[in-house]
Length: 543
Image (cartoon, rainbow, N blue to C red; front, top):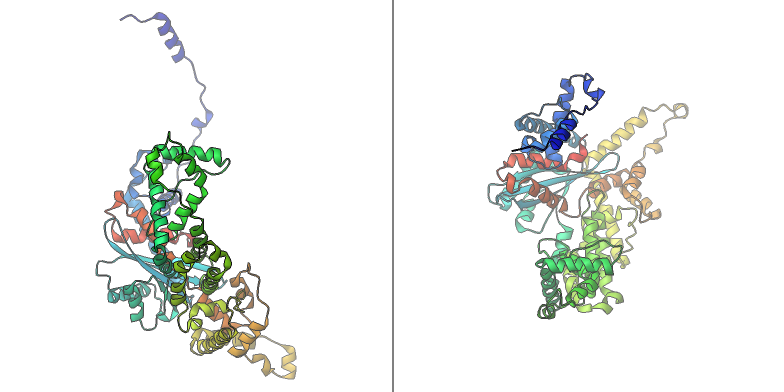
C-alpha cells in the first residue's frame, strides 16, 4: 500500500511541534501529611452518610479520577476503612447526644413503623427538645429492625429499650406522638407514666378520607385519574401538553400532571390543583384531533375541580404548617381546627359546594377533635402558653375560655409541686441571691419580701394582664426574655412546646431509609441501616 508523501510530511511536521512545558509540573509539592490524609479519609466517609452513597463508590473509576484530580497524593483506601471511620463517627455522635440529654429535662418523641424493600420491618424513634437558649432541636434516636411481631407488648418494650440506650428516664418524656394504629397506641398506654398523642395530620386525613368516597367526589376523582393516566401513558400527548404551556402560559414553569396516591397526604388536592392550573392547555390538547383521537377525547371529561380545590386547600396549608420540626407546632392544633371549622360554616364555602365541604370534614372533625373535655387537652393548654394565642380568640364561648384558664391554673400548681427541676430552679435562684453583697441590705437588714416567690395563680394572672404578641412573633424568644419573671410557666411552656403536633418526623425517615435500602443495597444489614440513617438525620447537630 502506498502512502501519500504529503500526508506523511504533514503528520511528521505536526509531531515535531514542541509544546512549552508548564513550570508548575517541576515544582516540588510537599508530601501529604498523615493528618491531612486522615482528614480526607473522614470527608470521604462522611460522603456516604450525608449523601446516602454506598461504600463501594470508592471502587468506581470515576470517583478515583475525581479524587486524583483534586489531590493526586491522596491514596484511596479500601471501602472497609471508610466503613470503620463511619462506625467511629456514629459512636462519637451517639455519645454527644448522651451528653446533651443529661441537661435536657423535657422531651417529646415520635415513633412510626416502615417496611424496607427486603420486607424487613423497622421502627423509628425521633426526639424533640428546647435548648437552654430556647431553640427548637430535633434528632433521630434509632431506626431498628423488628424481627418480632409488631404487637403492643413488643413495641412498648422496644420504646423502653430505646430510652434506656440514651439513659432517658420516662418522666422526662412530655408526650409520645404516634399515628392512629391500635398496636402503637396501646403500646404507649402500656407504659403507665407515658402520655400518648395522636398525630394531628394523620387524624385530620382520616376525617377527610371518608368524605372523598362520597359519590359526587368519587366520580370526580375517577375522571381526574383517567385523564392524568392518559397523559402519563402517551408520550405524544405529554409532549403536546408541554408545547401548549409554552404558548398559553408564557414565562411560567412547565408543569407535569400529578397522580393521586392513597398513601400520600394531600395528593388528591395536588392532582386537582394541577389539573385546574393546566385546564386550558389540557383542553387544547384534547380538542386537537391530530394529537388526540376523537373517540379518546370524548371519553376524557375535564370536570370542574374548582370547588374541590377550594375545600381541600385549607387542609393542604394546615398539614404543611403542622409538619415542621423547626418551631413549636402543638400550640397551633386548636387555632387551626377552629379556623377550619369556621371555613366550613362560612358563606364562601357554602356557595361553592356545601355538600362536599360538610361531608369531607364536617361531623367527623367535630366528633374526633371536639369530644368531651377537649378544652382540657394538652394542645389547648399549649395554645394558652403561646403569648400570641393566650386570649383564645379562636374560641367564641367565654365560659369555655374560663374553664381552660382554670384548668391551666390547676395544672401549673400540680406541675410546680411535683417537678423537681422547678425546685432546683428556685434553690439556685435563692442561692445566687444570697451570695450577692448588698451594702444597703447589710445596713438595714435582709428584705424578706424580695425572697417571696409568686404563686402559680399570680403568674398566670400577670401573664393574662399583658397584651398578646403579634402573630408573626416567635413564642420561644418571648419566653427566653420572660422566663425569669414567670419561672413556673416557662418550665411548663418548655415541657409542652417540645411536643410535635405530628409523627411526620418519624415518617420522613422512611424516605432516607428508602434511599439506603434500595435494590442495589438490599443486602445492607439492619445495624448499618440504623447507623447511616442516624448520621444522616442528625447531621445538623454535627460539626
